[in-house]
Length: 160
Image (cartoon, rainbow, N blue to C red; front, top):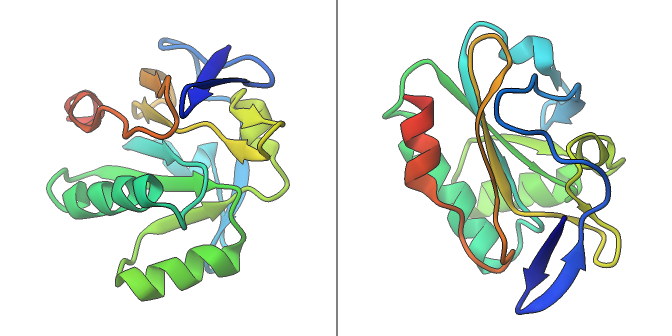
Protein backbone atom coordinates (compact mmCIF):
# COMPACT_ATOMS: atom_id res chain seq x y z
CA UNK A 1 0.00 0.00 0.00
CA UNK A 2 1.14 3.53 -0.69
CA UNK A 3 0.48 6.79 1.11
CA UNK A 4 1.90 10.21 0.41
CA UNK A 5 3.87 12.67 2.48
CA UNK A 6 3.34 16.20 1.19
CA UNK A 7 2.47 14.67 -2.16
CA UNK A 8 5.47 12.32 -2.42
CA UNK A 9 4.54 8.60 -2.51
CA UNK A 10 5.73 6.37 0.33
CA UNK A 11 5.41 2.59 0.52
CA UNK A 12 4.08 0.85 3.63
CA UNK A 13 5.87 -2.36 4.56
CA UNK A 14 3.66 -5.39 5.07
CA UNK A 15 -0.05 -6.14 5.00
CA UNK A 16 -2.63 -3.92 6.65
CA UNK A 17 -5.45 -5.49 8.70
CA UNK A 18 -8.95 -5.07 7.32
CA UNK A 19 -12.35 -4.36 8.83
CA UNK A 20 -13.89 -7.62 10.02
CA UNK A 21 -10.53 -9.20 10.88
CA UNK A 22 -9.17 -9.80 14.34
CA UNK A 23 -6.73 -7.18 15.55
CA UNK A 24 -3.15 -8.35 14.88
CA UNK A 25 -1.28 -9.40 18.00
CA UNK A 26 0.68 -6.60 19.61
CA UNK A 27 2.46 -5.98 22.88
CA UNK A 28 3.76 -2.54 23.81
CA UNK A 29 4.67 -0.77 27.04
CA UNK A 30 2.97 2.41 28.16
CA UNK A 31 4.74 5.26 29.95
CA UNK A 32 4.50 3.37 33.26
CA UNK A 33 6.17 0.33 31.65
CA UNK A 34 2.93 -1.64 31.89
CA UNK A 35 2.47 -4.06 29.00
CA UNK A 36 -0.58 -3.30 26.87
CA UNK A 37 -1.70 -5.95 24.40
CA UNK A 38 -4.75 -7.50 22.75
CA UNK A 39 -5.87 -9.06 26.05
CA UNK A 40 -5.83 -5.62 27.68
CA UNK A 41 -8.51 -4.50 25.22
CA UNK A 42 -10.86 -7.49 25.61
CA UNK A 43 -14.29 -6.60 26.92
CA UNK A 44 -14.33 -2.99 25.78
CA UNK A 45 -14.19 -1.08 22.53
CA UNK A 46 -10.95 0.68 21.72
CA UNK A 47 -9.67 3.38 19.41
CA UNK A 48 -6.05 2.93 18.40
CA UNK A 49 -4.66 6.22 17.16
CA UNK A 50 -1.36 5.80 15.29
CA UNK A 51 0.81 8.77 14.39
CA UNK A 52 4.29 9.35 12.91
CA UNK A 53 5.93 11.77 15.39
CA UNK A 54 4.36 13.37 18.46
CA UNK A 55 6.56 16.44 18.05
CA UNK A 56 4.83 17.57 14.86
CA UNK A 57 1.75 19.74 14.50
CA UNK A 58 -0.69 17.20 13.04
CA UNK A 59 0.32 14.44 15.45
CA UNK A 60 -0.10 16.86 18.34
CA UNK A 61 -3.58 17.79 17.05
CA UNK A 62 -4.59 14.16 16.57
CA UNK A 63 -3.51 13.11 20.06
CA UNK A 64 -5.10 16.13 21.74
CA UNK A 65 -8.34 15.56 19.84
CA UNK A 66 -8.74 11.99 21.07
CA UNK A 67 -7.70 13.01 24.59
CA UNK A 68 -10.40 15.70 24.62
CA UNK A 69 -13.17 13.35 23.49
CA UNK A 70 -12.06 10.39 25.60
CA UNK A 71 -14.29 11.33 28.52
CA UNK A 72 -17.29 11.76 26.24
CA UNK A 73 -17.33 8.13 25.09
CA UNK A 74 -17.64 5.88 28.12
CA UNK A 75 -16.23 2.36 28.09
CA UNK A 76 -13.95 3.07 25.12
CA UNK A 77 -10.20 2.82 25.59
CA UNK A 78 -8.01 5.13 23.55
CA UNK A 79 -4.46 4.06 22.78
CA UNK A 80 -1.93 6.36 21.11
CA UNK A 81 0.90 4.62 19.28
CA UNK A 82 4.07 5.88 17.61
CA UNK A 83 7.70 4.94 17.40
CA UNK A 84 8.68 7.94 19.48
CA UNK A 85 10.63 6.96 22.57
CA UNK A 86 8.93 6.78 25.95
CA UNK A 87 10.89 9.88 27.00
CA UNK A 88 9.66 11.85 23.97
CA UNK A 89 6.07 10.79 24.64
CA UNK A 90 6.41 11.54 28.36
CA UNK A 91 7.90 15.00 27.64
CA UNK A 92 5.08 15.79 25.20
CA UNK A 93 2.42 14.75 27.74
CA UNK A 94 4.03 16.92 30.42
CA UNK A 95 4.28 19.93 28.12
CA UNK A 96 0.78 19.49 26.70
CA UNK A 97 -0.81 18.76 30.07
CA UNK A 98 -2.26 15.54 28.67
CA UNK A 99 -2.60 12.27 30.60
CA UNK A 100 -3.24 9.80 27.79
CA UNK A 101 -2.36 6.15 27.19
CA UNK A 102 0.80 6.54 25.11
CA UNK A 103 2.53 3.47 23.68
CA UNK A 104 6.05 3.49 22.30
CA UNK A 105 6.86 1.18 19.39
CA UNK A 106 10.59 1.80 19.05
CA UNK A 107 11.08 -1.90 18.24
CA UNK A 108 8.54 -1.55 15.39
CA UNK A 109 6.71 -4.77 16.30
CA UNK A 110 3.32 -3.02 16.20
CA UNK A 111 4.19 -1.17 12.99
CA UNK A 112 5.15 -4.39 11.23
CA UNK A 113 2.22 -6.43 12.57
CA UNK A 114 -0.19 -3.76 11.28
CA UNK A 115 1.69 -3.08 8.01
CA UNK A 116 2.17 0.58 8.95
CA UNK A 117 5.95 0.97 8.83
CA UNK A 118 7.38 3.39 6.28
CA UNK A 119 11.06 2.31 6.08
CA UNK A 120 12.12 5.27 3.94
CA UNK A 121 11.11 7.65 6.75
CA UNK A 122 11.42 5.33 9.79
CA UNK A 123 7.92 6.26 10.98
CA UNK A 124 4.47 4.73 11.29
CA UNK A 125 1.72 5.75 8.89
CA UNK A 126 -1.02 7.92 10.37
CA UNK A 127 -3.99 5.65 10.98
CA UNK A 128 -6.96 4.86 13.19
CA UNK A 129 -8.33 1.46 14.14
CA UNK A 130 -11.50 0.89 16.15
CA UNK A 131 -12.03 -2.56 17.64
CA UNK A 132 -15.06 -4.09 19.30
CA UNK A 133 -15.21 -5.92 22.63
CA UNK A 134 -14.02 -9.18 21.02
CA UNK A 135 -11.00 -7.61 19.34
CA UNK A 136 -12.47 -7.43 15.84
CA UNK A 137 -11.68 -4.37 13.72
CA UNK A 138 -14.89 -2.42 13.08
CA UNK A 139 -13.30 0.68 11.54
CA UNK A 140 -9.96 1.31 9.87
CA UNK A 141 -8.45 4.38 8.28
CA UNK A 142 -4.93 4.68 6.95
CA UNK A 143 -4.73 8.37 6.11
CA UNK A 144 -3.70 8.63 2.43
CA UNK A 145 -1.70 11.84 3.01
CA UNK A 146 0.17 11.44 6.30
CA UNK A 147 0.55 15.20 6.71
CA UNK A 148 -3.26 15.44 7.12
CA UNK A 149 -5.52 14.61 10.07
CA UNK A 150 -7.66 11.47 10.12
CA UNK A 151 -11.47 11.49 9.95
CA UNK A 152 -12.13 11.73 13.68
CA UNK A 153 -15.91 11.59 13.38
CA UNK A 154 -15.98 8.26 11.52
CA UNK A 155 -13.78 6.70 14.19
CA UNK A 156 -15.87 8.12 17.02
CA UNK A 157 -19.11 7.00 15.37
CA UNK A 158 -17.73 3.46 15.03
CA UNK A 159 -16.72 3.44 18.69
CA UNK A 160 -20.18 4.43 19.97
